[in-house]
Every structure is written in C-alpha cells, then in structure tokens.
Image (tube, rainbow, N blue to C red; front, side, top):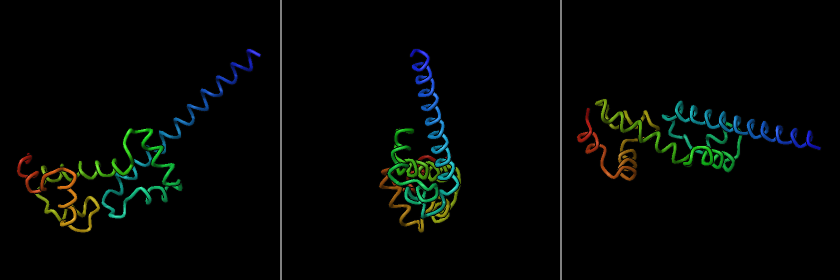
Length: 130
C-alpha cells in the first residue's frame, strides 16, 4: 500500500512537471513567434492559435495563466515598447515605424498610440528623445 502511494505521488509530481515544462515551451514559442512577426499587420491571437494548431480559447487561457496578462495585451505591450524605442532612439518617419510594428498606415498608428499612451507620437518623441 505504502509503495503504491509513493509511486502515485511521484508520478503525479512528474506529470505536473511535464505539464509545466510543456506550458513553458508553448509560451516561449508564442513569445518568439510574436517577436518574429510583430511587423505583420495580421498578427493576432487567432493567427497565433492557427499557426500552433491550438484553439484560441486554450492559448489565451494558457498564456494568461502563465504570464498574468492576456495574449492580446502582450502583443499590444510589445508593439508599444518597440514604437516608444523607435520614437526616442531614431528619426524614422511615422510611416516607417508603422511598417515595423504591423500597421498599414501611420494615421491609424498615431490614433492607436494616442489611445494607448494618452499622448501623440510627436509629443512622446519630443519629450523623451535621447
């Protein structure tokens, strides 16, 4: 009886460990995919789910449970981080920045940036320039 109990505990531990390792790998692959495809205007949770052959529901829950933020929020934060860095460290035109972060045009990018940051890209660039 005791031996069976120990075997059950050990197998549960390693089973959970393997699940955790699999989740780590999936999330790591998603992060790599987002980074490599950030300039694709079609980048979305649905695109990622289709690429990895998982349901949207499964991926969004896995990513949120693992990272604490939604996958959509991660993509938004990644884009914002790149845009901010490009604004303050380069003199790229807004349409060039739009191309690098997956926006079809600079007008939409400017509106999206203002909605997410609360200030215009021009103001952000001028007040944070390195």
